[in-house]
Image 1 (tube, helix red, strand yellow):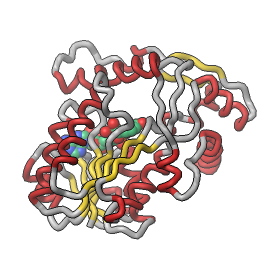
Image 2 (image 1 turned 180 degrees about the vertical axis):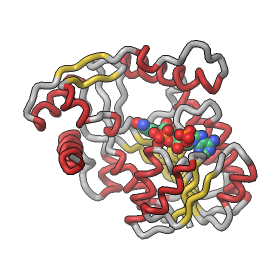
Image 3 (image 1 turned 135 degrees about the vertical axis):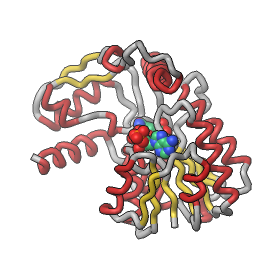
Amino acid sequence: MILVTAASGRTGRSLVRALVRAGKRVRAADIAPSVSELRDHGADEAVVADLLEPGDLRKAMQGIKSVIHIGPLFHHREAEIGHAVVAEARRAEVEHFVQFSVVHPQIEALLNHQAKLAVERAVIQSPIPFTILQPMHYLQNIDVAATVRSGVHRKPFSHDSRLAQVDLEDVTTVAAKVVGDPHHHYATYELCGSDYVNGHQIAAVIGEVAGRPITTELQPLSDFASSGRQRREEDEFPYDAMYRLWGHYSRYGITGNPNVLGWLLGRPPTTLREYVVRELQAAATDN
Ligand SMILES: NC(=O)c1ccc[n+]([C@@H]2O[C@H](COP(=O)([O-])OP(=O)(O)OC[C@H]3O[C@@H](n4cnc5c(N)ncnc54)[C@H](OP(=O)(O)O)[C@@H]3O)[C@@H](O)[C@H]2O)c1
């Protein structure tokens, strides 16, 4: 049985689907009660568990052979959660620990990278055979249907910056392939897409596929502002983390090499154009 943490989120849902497709047995765990919906998508078990609660974590880990740990997004205690999951996996004598990290976790100015670097260290230092996956910013952060509807590609960082965004479906296909396979023990895999493009180029590809012009617009950070009355760390942390990330993307962009992803998939990574076509076909089917 494979334990997937943060299973009810965007990454987790895609991962559970990929594991089910690959014929694996899955226990999905998340603090959100919506995790129970994953039973309808083929998960064998779904448990509501707060990873910060030792009792919940222990129960979630019972009888587990492999763990795929996804850290909750922009969580002020992400590193602590990761350490707790590694410690409990060790206690439960788990045979393989797959850590969902991020590309270039050594960019420590970024709070989400900082947390993942700390968890990578704990994973590497534990006696459990591990595989670390380092995905780039997902292509799924581009809402193609909404962009076509509005005619505007909007995002909160510079459209001049280039990123090598990756298809989340490629990433979770790889995770389902490596988990439980000793050939992938002690490996760290950077998972990046092959299009190293800026926002203007993304808008042009969407425009070509949709057959209408798409402009670009910088989304103001105020769209993401907290109420200002909140002063607790857990409330402010996600905004601090997001602002740092977008500031970094604006200044430096972020890249990486797609070769490893292609090798693991046994085919080239999904391109930006393929992603756009797929999203528009899915939107047409939904309507
Ligand atoms: N988005 C990207 O482009 C990208 C790229 C590379 C890596 N990543 C990484 O992938 C990870 C997952 O991102 P995501 O977009 O899938 O996140 P997400 O959709 O926000 O899902 C995170 C899930 O974790 C749950 N959660 C929060 N606190 C928890 C706790 N204490 N115990 C158990 N579950 C808890 C959340 O529940 P609630 O919603 O109820 O809080 C949510 O269901 C993040 O670490 C992110 O940094 C993302």
